[in-house]
Image (tube, rainbow, N blue to C red; front, side, top):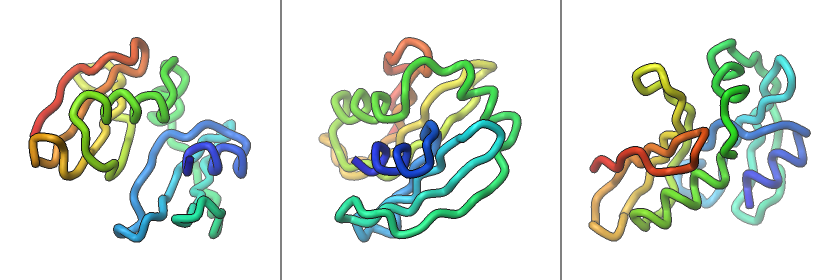
Length: 128
């Protein structure tokens, strides 16, 4: 829900998500043309604030290549290993852009990094 709220608030595409110190809130980075907007979303899905920033060329290139949105990558990762979402970011794995989804307290009891393809939506790897 935080991703939808942030994208609506900023009018762009979410490309990074971090939990807000375990309080149930989120910091969502949203790309909007050549800039980034960090939207802080509270546990009740209310926007608590926004902050403008530059969007670096690497993140723009990754987003331009991605056909799978951040929210879908999160759903895929949680379905794969369970757990609670900790964060998501774009990462370059050997020249290929992926969503790196961090999950805490998974079904196996470990914290796990799940790598999801930005183009196919498939799980590439899951490492504890």
